[in-house]
Image 1: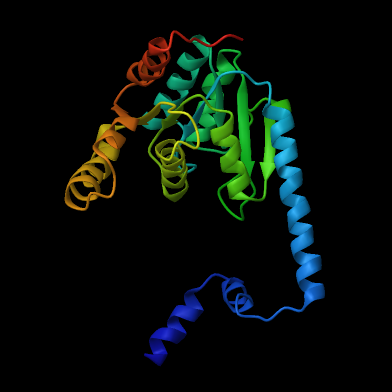
Image 2 (image 1 turned 90 degrees about the vertical axis):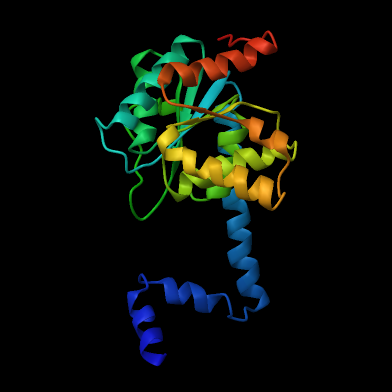
Length: 248
């Protein structure tokens, strides 16, 4: 057991042990006041910048997906096509501002002269802002939770491409807020039946039917599609029901 523990410690990224030990560290009042007060002001500044830059962007759709998706891959090309078609239908596009699917979304919006928003997160790996974001609509964040507020607050729909942990986090954030009626019932479109099908089956068979942890109507919050046209149609059809359309 000692050897296993030692091996696990050696495999941890540099600085991780420090963060874990700090959680058990008793801090005096001066340390709490100085560190936490600084964090509060930093968080406030990120909210203020986000609200000021995004308050008047008009109807937009947030596109989520992996930063690791390569240029030219089928999902990259589809995200680019979806974004371009959304702009043609009157929407702006919001992404995380980085590479992969995010770059594809901004590229598609940029190609059609549409609003191309990038909510970039500062990470030690993967993330850097792509060149297709409108410079006056590029915002850099330190805090994921502030960034997620901007994704949700200023979007009238969500298109979710295949992705990893961050994409799943963003998807379930939007679902939770809609399910609990903290935000309106905006459309959520999952693109890629082969990618998302297993997750949707598990939610239906286990979470809904076996454990009854959600209601049957919660399954209607998600539309599963396979093409760019289907994704954009799902957004258009939702707003046609309310006789609403984008107006820039």
